[in-house]
Length: 325
Ligand code: UDP
Ligand code: MG
Image 1: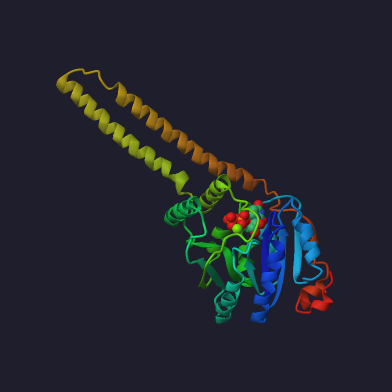
Image 2: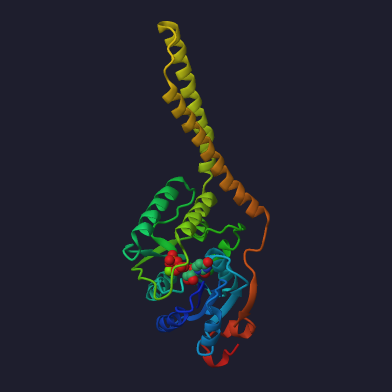
C-alpha cells in the first residue's frame, strides 16, 4: 500500500521544513509507504532550493519544479499526474491540512471507500470576509451547479488511484479542482478535522484572486447564469406588453397625461443595466471558451528531482538507504 502526498507550493520557503518534520511520524504510524511530491509553482523565495536541500535527509520527498506560477489548480494536476501511489492525498504546504487526519483517512480507505473527504468542523480560523464569502459561494453553487460540491471541504482528501485516473481524464484547461473531484463521484466517506492557522508565511489568495476562483467554479459547473437572460428578457417583454395595454387604455379613457419622466428614466436605466450584466456574464463564458480552445499546456515542468530512477519508484522511500536520487 503506497500513499502519495501531493503538495503545491508557492513561496513556502518558511513552511517546507516544518511540513517535512510533521509528516513522517504520522505516515510511519500508519505503516504505509509514502512519497511526498512537492510541486514548486513558480516560487521566487527559494522554496525549490530549500526542498532540494531537505531531500538529502528526506528521500521520500520529490520535487516537480514548474517553469513559472501556473496557479494551485495546475500545480495540483501536475502532482496528480506524477503520483504513483495507490491512494493520493493533496495537501497544502502550510500545515493547514493537518497530517494527523491522514491516519483516519487511511482507515476509511481500507474499509473500501474510494474517496475520503476531510471536512472542517468549523471556520473559526478564517477571517470574517473569508467565512462570509465562502458561505455565500457554497450556497450559490449548491443551488445552481449540476455537481454536488460539498461545503467546508477543500482539496484535502484521500483519493483512490481509480479516482485520480478518472480526474485526469477531465480535459479542461481551467481546472476548478474541487468541482472536478466532486464530478468524478465514487463511494465517499468523511472525516472531520480542525483547520489550524497557517504555520508560517502568507496566503497567496487575496480577495480578487478568490473572486476569480469563484467565477471559475461557477462557469465551470453550471451554464445557468448565461441561460437565465432569455427568461429574464421574456419576463420583461410580458411586463412591457401589459404596461403598454394599460397605458393605451388609460389614454383612451382619461385622455392624454404626460408625467412619467422619473418612471421612464428608472426603467431605461434598469433595463440598460440588466443588458450590460447579461453581456458581461456572456463575456465571462466566452473568455473561458477562448482559453479552452487554445489547448495550451496546463503547466510546464522546468525540472524534476527524485523521479529519475524508476527503481526508486518501485522500492519507494521506505528503503531510505537506497534512495539517493
Ligand atoms: N499555492 C500554489 N500556487 C499558487 C497559490 C497557492 O501552489 O499560485 C499553494 C500554496 O503554496 C499552499 C496552497 O496552494 O500550499 C494553499 O494556498 P494558501 O495557503 O496561500 O491559501 P489559503 O490556505 O489561504 O486559502
Ligand atoms: Mg493555507
